Length: 295
View 1 (spheres, helix red, strand yellow):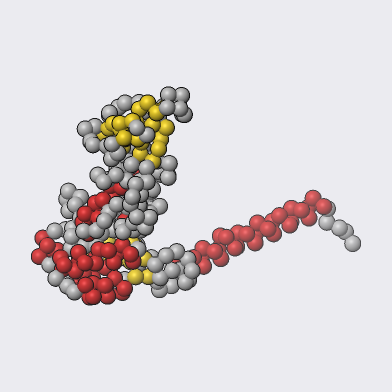
View 2 (cartoon, rainbow, N blue to C red):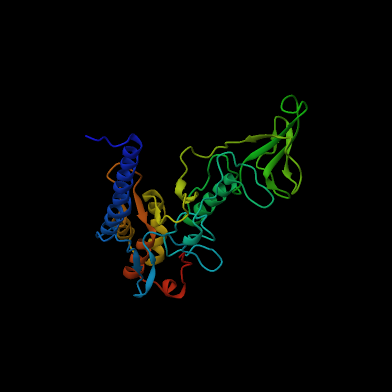
């Protein structure tokens, strides 16, 4: 019996592998994906219809419910911040790429801390609650000092600057270790100062939830936390002339739980919730103002 040469056996084995992988990845897998795409709920159909019967976006992509100047429309629940383009731009999905060490403002870009502080203050003012957060000043910027020492990084303190409070702002602290705190002069070099964030007396658990002041990784998420929705409910109920109980009932209707019961956190779909409000509790302001909607 003639044996197949070793080199030929190897080639035949390789051809078999190529054939099997071609069938699996080139035929079976694509067909399985096409079949899955036609399963109800997985078919990618996420279009939502507004109260006027016209297309109003997607249930999978958030929107900014603001006026032409970027001010919140008080009759709507507000979405979380977005770094996707000018906000919820599906063609420019992305994050801010700023981490926890981003605490000092640059000339052309505020730090992450200042963004969080400013947003928290704005939400607090809008909802009539305490918008203070640790390491934030009362005027909504980072409570961060630039401390100059006689010996560089140690020794006697010679100068202190409130780095995120540009002149002529009044520094959040009058003195630090016996030295008067001054405001930051735009364009001045404070790179040799020791950065000292100051916690302040804000509560450890702020009233304004974290998702109200930070953007999602994609910048497109249409959900907010139930806590943020609950915070906004009294304002929306007042603007809509609805009872707080009814508005909270709508929040519960458009709240989804954790995926498979364990992954992620519960979320409230703001797009669907606001459309439901327009249908059930239309207002003059609703018809007179158009939300700034992301694509």
